[in-house]
Image (cartoon, rainbow, N blue to C red; front, side, top):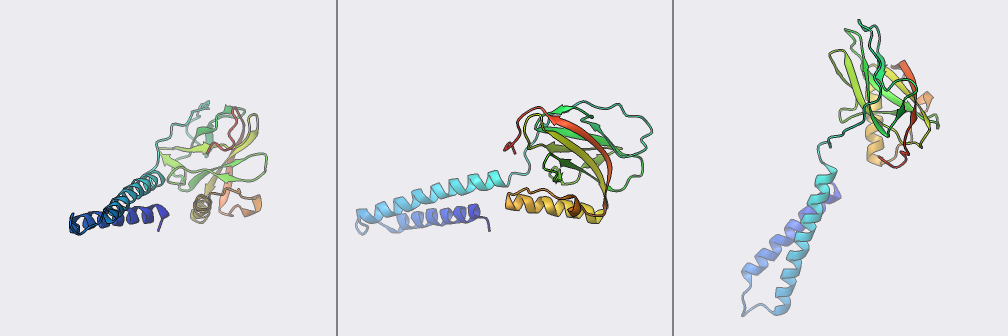
Amino acid sequence: MAIEIVILIIGVVFVLLSILGGMKSDSSSTSKLNAKLILSIGIIGICMMIYGGFYYGSMNHPGQIERPAVASILEVQHPVQRVQIISPVEGDRVPCRVLSMGVYPEGHDKDIWVLLLPSDNMFYPQSDHTNTSFKRNGEWQVITRFGGSMDEDYEVIVFEADASASQFFSDTIDEWKRNLFYPGLTEEELPEGAVEVDRITVTLADHCRGVF
């Protein structure tokens, strides 16, 4: 159970005890000390409820609406023959958060993942709240979040993944989020079911370390 929920529950208990204590007491049988104690418990309970409720809500908000930047968009040749990235484009200077977009051919049935490869040569799978890139009507997209320094080059790599590889990436992201630690993946750690299908190089236009 999250610590915020525990604090919230204790706060509710304190407030109830304060209310019940006030109802049972009267001026003739309750000392000023007991009255002050009941009042203190009630105030502490209210403060704990506010604290627990606020932080529980902020930590469990169902996904904040993000407004990522949109970079240059590559003109698409139809009919689409392969999975490819169309935005950003090769050589773009990008902000810390940008919407990566692409296309896929008719009948494509695998998940699409974008992995970032910065100068530390570690791979960082990108996801929205659904983890995999969103696919619809031959187009896909995912918010990509950069964490490097201004003018640092990044490889933006697109993979198509089978069910096992996709689950691996999802589990990896979930573990990183739980631990609040994002070490990246080595090339050897990439699952066999993930196949690279496109790659571009972009450059950061801002300082992005510690932004996310």
